[in-house]
Length: 225
Image (cartoon, rainbow, N blue to C red; front, side):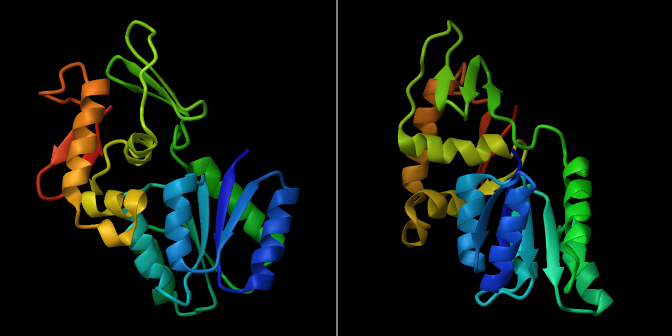
């Protein structure tokens, strides 16, 4: 079942879209503002985000740019703006499609199907190989090279999952800190270094020379398959 996150500050529209998409056998969650949308993307890993550009706390273009800094989830932008420059700006920021309000539900469903078809294969992969270890997100298990179980703490899972779900993508240390510990700890990056070191000892063939969980000094971290 495909996961769709709908982001809009109109409660009636959120409810209508949620019910309609659920009837089409999509797994749906909603968010009324940018802050909750970013939290949902980080914690739930949707297959598609339907994002209204006119949000109460942050412009939708900024949300798209923020997501594209660390996530490749397909995005359909919604807006009442009729100026073609707004559509161009949304697409340039990283949106995959753009729909002007008001729209028909059949039109939206067709756009959803088209965007999902174009999405890169493996975007929601549930099993990832890290060196000799097999990480299963669905079962929350890690299996070592001799089929032994490797234990990860809940915080280690929270740090590892965004990296593995976005291979090759630089994720800034502050972003990881905010997702795991909240905004008040975004600068406490020494915690992150400790947990990354632990993850490397558990998953990397040679923790002293990591090949998969890579540190980009002064910027953040990335997973290289």
